[in-house]
Length: 336
Image (cartoon, rainbow, N blue to C red; front, side, top):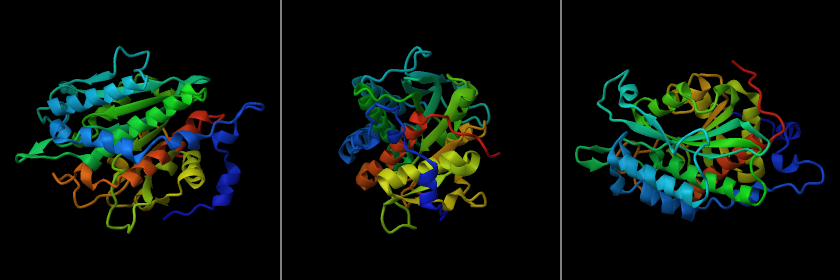
């Protein structure tokens, strides 16, 4: 596991709660972080990963039903779609989904929600998760509770926390795009479609925080107080340091960098949706709990999720996004 001298990192960085303008009471991200709760995540996940959603196969009726539920939650919390869009959907045509490998996929949609920045609205932080799964195989529903129902509901809670801060007068300085992508299971297709057809210029996209499987533990850990951090240091030393400092300040998870090794045979860095941002030079980090025995099986069900761990990892993503959105300068790209 990668080790970084903690005092050096903290000395070199200042979390945004202490970097407000003189004379202004600093917002405490911990207050809003704590609105991300295990109970609310559980409520959402038992719906998103229910049998009713039929495994959320790309373009299926079940996936569309899950998408409608997500949009209902954003609307309930007063979070809208981006002004430049006409609704919550970025349509991804079947012609694109089947162009490289024809799997007879129908039209599908990415889903986006948006909180505009108060000071630098043109600069955008993307928080992404895929909401598709593998559907029904051999008559059995693959619910995909961890993969990636966990990331899907984490985005709902993170967005709610940012919206609560905004209502209290502490909205993010930069804009935040909450991006639920389709077609991940068929080759990162939805995120590739967004990166090739972005709503906001990629030059103005500061970073991507990608959340894919954060509700379980793998065989390498005896408890769930950890998360794998993948890619944070590949393009930006500042993104890596922000993750470390945010965690040390607020969540105290064990940050496991095992799969960040470029020589790791699993190649997880190339296997989730952040990669379609990183390949365009956008600093990206992937939060992950590792593979478990129920991966891509019908036994990946909501009752097996460790909801306290899911909440803590979602909180970590939130405070990382908070710093990215509120720091004085956008993070540098200082690595190839």
